[in-house]
Image (cartoon, rainbow, N blue to C red):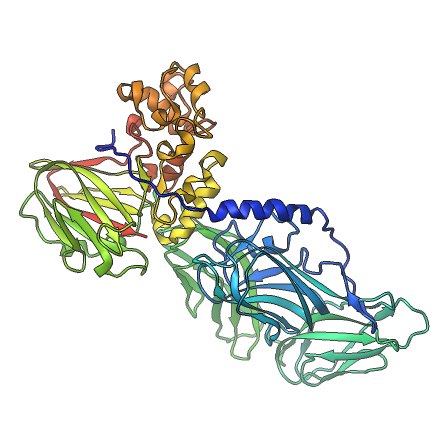
Length: 640
């Protein structure tokens, strides 16, 4: 059983997620009115703002995402129950490729409560040079309908100042273009074009007009040097002189002023015809904290060429050498798209794109460097030496990371080591920012004359990410606490993942005491007598022999369960109905409701899956309790 259990004071705060839920409910009514429709390719002189959302289901990218659950595409999927969410920094952007140049007349943004206080709406024809068509520094979020005037194939929201501590978050980003009841001009997209420098090129552009008898005039922007378009016929011709890839936009206009356009890429390869081919390595899978190595291979149609490699989109912690070796140790879980390119000395190049998934699987143990320089830990005069290391990812300096034990409080800048004497059951507290401040957590331990028993615990609440490395004089190492991937992500990301992970009844735990902590369900009034979920465990417990204890007592192994560890563990894990031999198999845990999903989350995010999520989590050996005889040192990593 967890060494010490107490009920902590709690502070309730207004939940930004509850507010967001209300916004979603309201906006969903509006979403019912939205329908996907074909994007018009034309516009007329006497134009009005159209009603077709041109951004719907179009390719959408962003400067960053908070995580895999909030991709950029969520902002253009037509659903007001999904959203894009960025990293928690400035600036950030969300961009939509409309497929062709459009005369934008209106933009609608459905903000989540994490909105932009200052942002711009910008358009571009080449995805490089941007023109601002709307700007504000006093946005109030909500649903914003912006009447604008501008033209471009690409449109983006460029946020410069966030209104909250979180990122930028948008349910839907919509764009509307000018339309009319007049003529419609449609330009046929010719697709990707490839030519060779010094070799004549020719491409006929085709367009149609909804009105008969019209004469079309053609123009183009972005053509490779050496090429031009015939205004009367739409024939692009000439001899390209410069290598590279450009975005070409061709426009056809009739005598009424109606026009249409389309964009495509045109690549001019070097003369001599070298062809570089990069072998696609296929989808890659790796694990956080495990060294990775992948050799990229490529070939050149010309002999004697030296290839130089580069890559974009690599997972954090990885890099590519000029010889094409991708190596390093992934630090963050997630899936991304990787593009590797190889170029030769003539400038010819080739590329390949593949996905790379980094999972938080395996033991979750951090790399050895995570624990600091353990060889520098002094020898203990007493039972063992404690070393406290700062793993807040730069959020707090060592001078603002504090420990407190036995009446002494110090920052690790002042004293990173503690010579631990024998003592009865006790706690060591850790604080960030200020001693006795709201960001805190603790470990529990008993230190004997030549032994230690210690654990991390989430029985009462989560406050700070903590991990322990216990090293014995015999060379043994034991590690418990939050896993490496959890340490690497932001605090807000951990809170959000918790909320996404647990069912409805548990979601408010993520906001009850945010951003300071996440209380255990037994400490939440919703699960206590008179609360909305007071009967959460009642029927299940009664069916398995416990007709006395309340839901809060079941979460906390109180009442009659204080003397019945097996039943308390069985109820929390939802295995009490199984034969005794199957109740200790972790594969059976948390497979159905009611269950302690708060505890399950902390197990899922713990080193080797071991954690104290409730008092009798040591039943069947699932707790974070570790011990060693003749200990040498222990490292405590304090995270944010």
